[in-house]
Image (cartoon, rainbow, N blue to C red; front, side):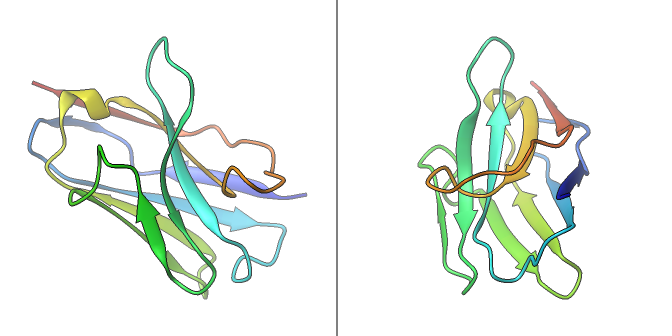
Length: 116
């Protein structure tokens, strides 16, 4: 059974940085494209960024230039480096496969709170 364990969330001031991690177990990580998602209070979960198995990346306009998705296949870990954080980045962040795939069961997520 695939398990997704996100970590690294915290309370941070606007303008600060965080690095999120997602450890994937129970499957072959290296051949899967992976994505980060977030869900803000009272809103639907939304896609943030995607990385293919070959390392190509894409992100939504609201985080372009501030967030960087990366992966370490040897550690079966997905990362999200978040810089220049804004209060509107406050959300629970999750990892999973991209929206166009059969996604795994969601993990517990990691909470990011950005204070103004």
